[in-house]
Image (cartoon, rainbow, N blue to C red; front, top):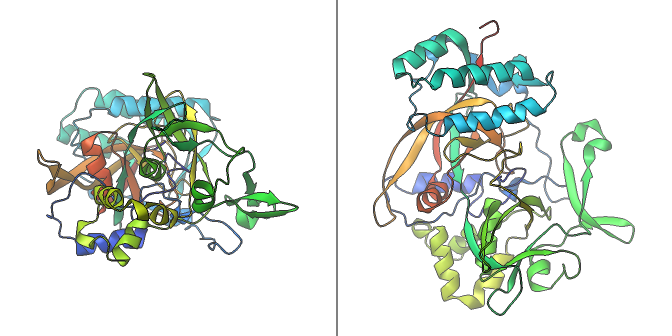
Length: 432
């Protein structure tokens, strides 16, 4: 969540294929308790590393990411939030754009725009929506003044899989004690990151994470070595201590969160890096071992299972070798362009193929919940959003992750959203 971005690299739930399997098999009107089990936009599951861990994935051509559509094909542009939070979200992106080179190129399908044009595009849109236009007025305005680009999606015809993420809140201490025994680690001093593009252009944007052992670079310690064998002793600072290792595990899945300390202070912990190990789903493990039925799977169910079977907790958590290290930020949660995420307005997409800070329009569904924290239906979700985040599992033109904020609804939406939809990007027409 601020991920969050190359960040949110871990998400508890399932890998994308598992996510889709759940979506196909679970009835849409099924009731779910508060919690989440699926991968978060920033799952480390897709972290690309050498040494046989996984193979490199070739990114699609930017010309095959999104295409400009005719004004007759524009979506209805109905904003279910009535523009709430949109002005703040746009102002955050403008602050980012004003800090970068004004001649930087942003790619929209086959078209190219510079930073100055991106700024004009957002400012013009912001000025107009401050008038709270009707849907009809907004459509006329956008048809006259903006180009709209639709993502090719995962099927080449525009279908995008939407998932979600949120900001967890934990209670902790700056001091280790009998009550607060489990550390949230900063980046270890022996962890190294190698930029492979320095060795060959064919590895542009790729990196590996490891450590030096004598004169060799070897994979970094996995979760079992870190949590069960003390591999980080003397190598990593504990930013805070919490009561429950499961809380840390879920924090790593989300990528950032707030720690409410026993001295009354609050600290924002934010994704810094990972150990570079591949992600494995403990949700899938518990399903495969018939510990939790597929139809009952949720974050809350995993929590209760581990609480009821403490003798299995270590083995279950260590099944996932991936590990996230954090840093403290004065604010948060932050996206990959280092601006604060806006609940319901910030999305994470593949940063290698979509233009950062761009104005987007999303169409999918969101859950309706009752007073007991159960989903009792789904309704349309269509709104303007800003691209300001990314994640290890968010790859290609067919994936997008919505940041829902914090609190019970955010946790529900983040945990259970795995619905198809469409994704559009808007940019001011040159000369407008």
